[in-house]
Image (cartoon, rainbow, N blue to C red):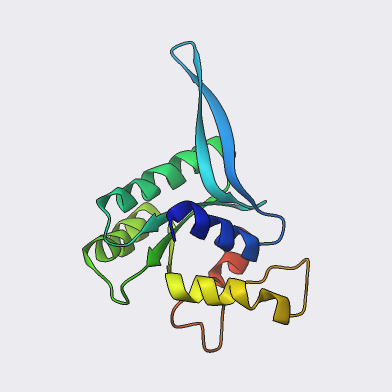
Length: 148
């Protein structure tokens, strides 16, 4: 499963969120835009895949989206191999230094959470993985606290 599909699943956890939102800005007389992977009323969320140096771009994108929107920047790295590798290690330290919330979710946890969504109650509220069995592989509860 690719980054776009995983972003769609993660955005579905957040009631009222939108994926691939465009934000426009002008530079040198030209209209440009950036896309935010997932956006809520309080957060701009960028996703990256583990094992990929391009995941580093997520920090830049989240900070620029914060500049354009005034919302809290978040980076979520998707863990596909079950351990903290080089780029996850870097991301954990760089996001802390930059003041960006960093979360990590396993691809399997995202897919399982999405597959069982119909079995959970509370439609219309945030359906964030958190305390319980899934917490060790995808705890997004911090999104409830940050930027509120």
